[in-house]
Image (tube, rainbow, N blue to C red):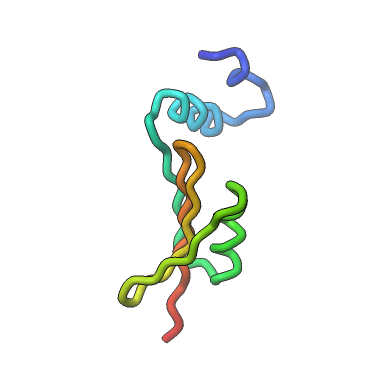
Length: 78
């Protein structure tokens, strides 16, 4: 394992995510049932360029940078 990954302040799960990131061609992070503002803020953690999408009764914010994709799905109002 890479020495940078072995730092003591990372949990075992965080270390595993870094291992998988380095081994993968692409990674996706998704969060569900968010308020619209929460979903936008989540995707903007990756940087500017977050886009809002809507299809049928689903809506979400999505952002992509390099091999990382972040999607925040919005709770639909009834």
